[in-house]
Image (cartoon, rainbow, N blue to C red; front, side, top):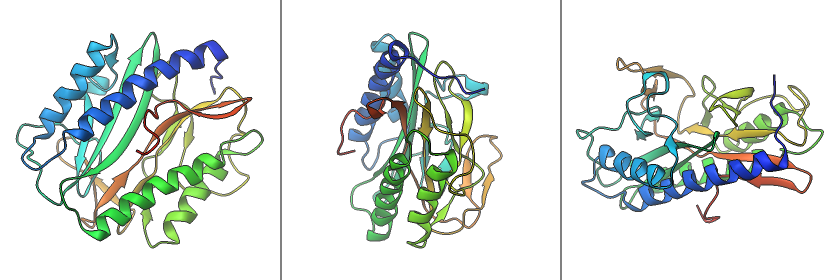
Length: 253
């Protein structure tokens, strides 16, 4: 069942979202050659806990990190590690959740390490832009399929693959709520969008195939063909005034 939120609950989600967004910005500022993904995770955990919140991902289903940090062909759920050292030209996906006063913020962004290839930058740009194409469809009377179709069309027209096995989702008191929000779909299909819905739209986009596989660690998901991926996500709320980007602290990111 889709859990609609009232104005007071959305205000609480804004606070969880702010903490989440700030944590990603701080980690993104620390992305450089020679830094470990464990160091980035430590930055994220410190900020979330300093704000009186809880890292939502830590212990979620047994996940050992405060954030999912995935490098290059890793799509999602990368485990932070002191053994993973960033190199010039890498692209790093940082996915963060923070729980504050009973509500969750969930957001992700992709950062380049030093000078990255034009191809990698184009992939990152496409993924970000596709999120906003999807968010444009998050309006009263539309359906979930309108969001996914907008993301899929934008990416596939540019030659990219949209990951299908993993999707966006409702968010609120729980990290994962109804409905699923795929990054592909058919216009006019799926649950109807109504005021009070809060969802996480999160394109995961590959420079090659959309096929993926899970590594033996039971968490890390990589592209089957080894191609680069990017990830961009915000928690968003549909209100009478329109869409609120709950986790967006800096509109340039």
